[in-house]
Amino acid sequence: MGSISHNTDRGSTDLLPMSDKTFPGSAAAAAPVSSSSSKKGIGRYLSYSGDSVQAFVGSYIAPLVPRFSRAAAEPKNAAVEQKRLKAEEAGEKPWQGEVAVNTEQKAAEERAKRLLLQREKIIARVSVDNRTRSLVKALNRASDVRVYINRVEELSYHLLEFPETRGVAVKEKAIPCLLRLRQAEDPSLKAAVREALTLVGYTNPVKGQGIRVLSIDGGGTRGLIALQTLQKLEALTGKPIYQLFDYICGVSTGSILGFMLGVFQIPLNECELLYRKLGSDVFKQNVIVGTVKMGWSHAFYDSETWENILKEKMGSDLMVETSRNPKCPKMAAVSTIVNRGTPLKAYVFRNYNLQPGVRSHYLGGCEHKLWQAVRASSAAPGYFQEFALGHDLHQDGGLLINNPTALAIHECKCLWPNTPVQCVVSLGTGRVETAGKNNTTYTSLKTKLTNVISSATDTEEVHIMLDALLPPDSYFRFNPYMNEDIALDESRGEKLNLLQAEGLRYLDRNQEKLQKAARILTRDKTTVQRLTEWAKLKHDMYDGIPIFNSKL
Image (cartoon, rainbow, N blue to C red; front, top):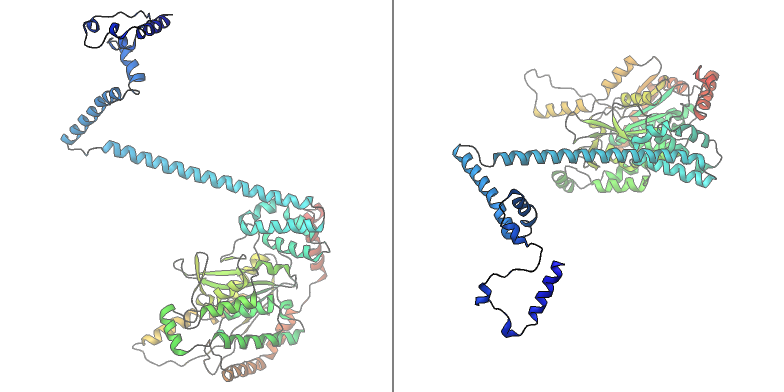
């Protein structure tokens, strides 16, 4: 009520005549005027000196009134300044405490960021794993063939993008489900299932009694010698090369031949014509232009032209997509990664995946395109530019492993760990022995460089080791001596004809060795092997039957 009477009095005062109003400076203004309001003003609180009043002002009024806030901050600033002056007088660094606090705060913020990032990764991994589980479970809920194909391909895309989820897919029983789907009659569904099984890491049994391996060295256009040996084997066995071998591995020119025969399954007589034409198209360059390019890009030949030829001939298919063809063997092309420090590291372009938990000694993957694999494997220093793929720079595999036979056997034992080796055929591209100068005092710089290159690209040391380690009558190496050192980029017809003539003479001298290799390659499985593989397949299809578990 006091406030109402106060407002009424103020309103009545405003209605007085101007002569009756009191102005500042008049005598009436100086006289004390008592308010009719019973509510005390804020000024009354300011006149008190108690702690409660100071707390009230500091907590509620000071932040609202700039004058009060400045007055409240002044003692703090004075205290901080006094502290700084004392620190300077004592010889200490000013603001040392504040710097330490800031450092601790930054460290705490960094730890918080790392924890947040780790948490996000865990959440992402959990969501990816859950996605894998849902894709596998969706395979059991399809209604027709088209839906099955779509869901199998979705699983394949997911495994390509997140290869680390293969273990989750296996735990969710993806392999039994896919094996049952593979029994369908629709060819498109079968092809999609074969690719998905490859991505999961499932491997079919070998076609013969044991593992049959074909390894082809690097050597440029001298690969025609390897083609001649394969023509002889095909004539003796009556079977195409892709049916004779379970695993084909090549380096540089060997990868080109391997892909022609294993992936594209081109007849050998056409391979020779294509190979000669390929050499004439790629290895043509003006000497002056090539020399300039050599100084500019460290490559004598046009790498872009080589890439365009590969893209045109091989298309845009991925390595793993070759597994859709049931007749295609396991394939590999080897390159050398040169930007990960020393020692250099071999990289295997595969058309397969290893089982979860099985690790190869060699880096590799199946997610690359066919033409990329050949381009990387054939990037010979000085001939073509190194090939950038992702974060890696690839050069010719022969820089590190010019004879990939040992690598191929290692990969096969990762694929079929309980299967013995039946036959290994290793093909060289010719070798030349040169007489050295009998100088016991020194060697020239040219000789030193030649020795380094010869040591790096040597293929016979691997042969000597494998010949001693592998079982008898299971390893066959064909690598003829040449009367003349033929260059890797030789494209003249007369020189290539001379190369082939020497290769034929070598094969005639080793006819018995060829016949023995052909006999071993064509050995069929025994009845016991077939029954065991049938039982193993049923075990895998139906996720384990006790009667088979005790025997397998």
